[in-house]
Length: 367
Image 1 (tube, helix red, strand yellow):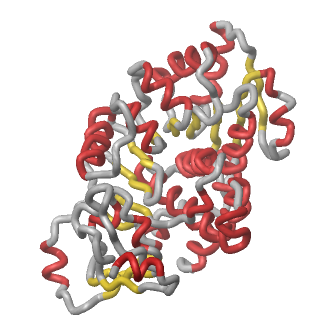
Image 2 (spheres, rainbow, N blue to C red):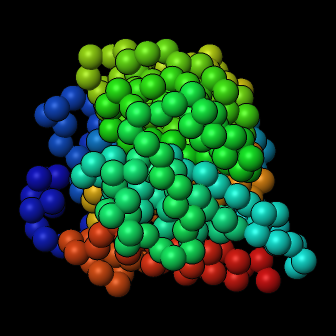
C-alpha cells in the first residue's frame, strides 16, 4: 500500500508521522519502506525521528498542529532537540543603534582562498557584507589577487606573500585581533602555507572566530587548540574526520551525542550542516533548523554561511546565537532563492541576493 501510494503521483498528507517511519529513531534499516509525504502534519510536537537518518526525505513540508494535548503534559516532556522557529530567530536579530559607525557595526577579518579556490573567498566576503558586518577585510595569498578582483568594491583586500616572514605572520594576527570577529578556512587549501597559518593563528586569536572547510580539515589532521569563542561549521564528512571516524555515519542519536561531546570538550559551538542542520553548544540542548531548500546543495553555499556567521559574531552575538540566527537566515534565503530560480537552477550567489529579503522577513515581524 505504501509503495503504491508513493507511485501514485498524488499529493500525500501524513497525519502525525509518515507511515513506516519510526517516530523516535527515524528510518530503520536500508529496506525500510515509508510514505513519501507531500506534507506532514505533526500533532502536538514534532517527533525526534523526523530529523534522524534519512527521514527528512519522507516528510515533505512539516507543519505542527495542536490536538488537545495540555500544556502541563508538554512541559513534562524531556526535550532531545529544540526546533528553531521564526519566533526564536527574531529574538536574536542584532540591535541597531542609530548613531553607530562602521566599526561599532562590526569589523570582520577573513582568511580564505587559494589558487583555483578564490571563489570561496569572494562568496564568503559577499555573505559577510550582506550579513551586516560594517567593514570586512579579506586576507588572501598574493598570487590570487587577480582572481579576487571581482570581489565587491566595499571589500578591503589585504594580500600576503606565499613565504611568510615572522613579521608578516604577526601582522596578519594583529589585523585579526583588531577585528571583532574572524572567519578562517573557505577555499584555504591544505598547502604548507595554509597549514602553517592555521597552526600559528589558532592558539593566538583573541576574537570570536568561524572555522570552516579547510580549517576543519587541517584541524582533523592535528589537534590544534581553539580560540576561546569559536563556531565550527562541518558537514557530516568533516565532522566524522574531526571525531576520528573512518566514514560519515548516519545521523543517529549516537552520532549527535559524539558531536555534543566534542562541543563540550573543545568549548565550541558546532553548526552541523545538512538537511536539517543541528546547532550544538556546551551545556545546552541542541537546536535543529528545518529551513532551507534542496537547491542549496551547490558549491559555495557553505562559504556564504561562513561569511554570514562571521558578520553576526562581529555584530556582537554569542557563538550560539550567531549559529542559530545565521542558519535560519541562510535557510530562509535558500527558500526565497528557490522560489525565484527553482531548486534546479539556483546557485550560491542567489543566497546572497536573497539575504536582504530574509532579514526583511524577520524584521517586519518585529516592527
